[in-house]
Length: 315
Image (cartoon, rainbow, N blue to C red; front, side, top):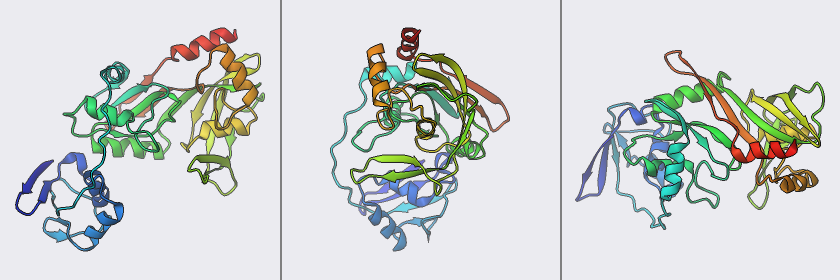
């Protein structure tokens, strides 16, 4: 992306490259004009202050390689700049990259690290990775993992790959397999749960997901790997990818995830803490994706040491 600034007027002219090809103009502006209220961004679009190749465009216009975008001078509110990632965190992220090519990478996300900033988190994995690789022109999350979930997380290095991988996920062609420890004895013969999920927001702002007939279709597949006294180790495959899907479907089956504070079994969690569990037992252990050229990539991440140690203690 090439940028030219007219110093006397404060007008910016940006030439679009492949990293923004296909992106909506409103999303492009929201990403560039951080700190500017969303209403202000849409107002300058409606008034025609933003131009593409000299012409007015609507918010849904999709940018193309070579487009020249005129961005008017906009006052950006001063904000406290969050501290960057520590050298230790930067090193940890680089060490946890389990796959990388020219178009995307997969990082073995540590538990406890949010995938992005917001909701009281100033710095997430994606912001930390961008700070670690300041010369990378494009780094975007392909999907998300809950903060306490560890394992395989895809990051696109090109917008074309971002679109490809998200299209693959929407079509159900990306295999995502997790290992989960649930409380109690998993019902025999229960290998598939199809229960619609609805996302609700409490007055506190907390998100809670519940099984609801009016919710979105949600399907999860389960396979018992091992039965312990008071707990069951499961291999879980997602057919759909709803917020908190595995957690809520396990709760729906009467066997919530060990260490899950939101959909918890309080007594089970207490017993698991005594055995050494310090977080929710959910690990994204495998991703299988097809690249644009048809190559199939199978990426695996072994169970982290803290979760493996817990299983040893349960034996």
